[in-house]
Amino acid sequence: MSKHEQEYKMIGLNIAYYRKLRGISQLKLAELIGLSRTHISNIEAPNMPTAVSLDTLLDIADALDVSAKKLLDFHE
Image (cartoon, rainbow, N blue to C red; front, side):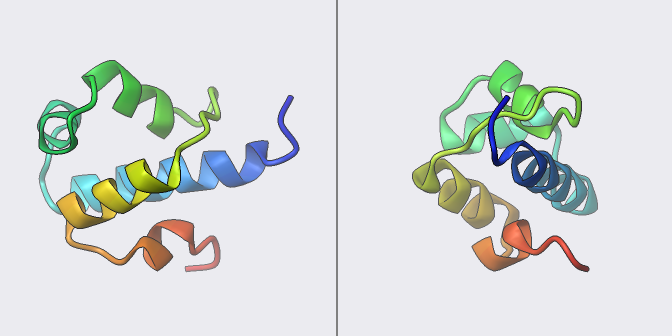
């Protein structure tokens, strides 16, 4: 169990929130940033906290047209 498991879960939930807000499917997001849909699904899944690289986080933020800060904000 990672010591940052809760943070990974929150990042994943924030990504899912902004992705749905923009009307983008997991597949479309994956295509936009060059990852598999399964990897996006794993990142978003709250029951499977998945670590995300800074490059991937910034790519996702760009694709969703939100700041990386919003994806890291756990208090909104």
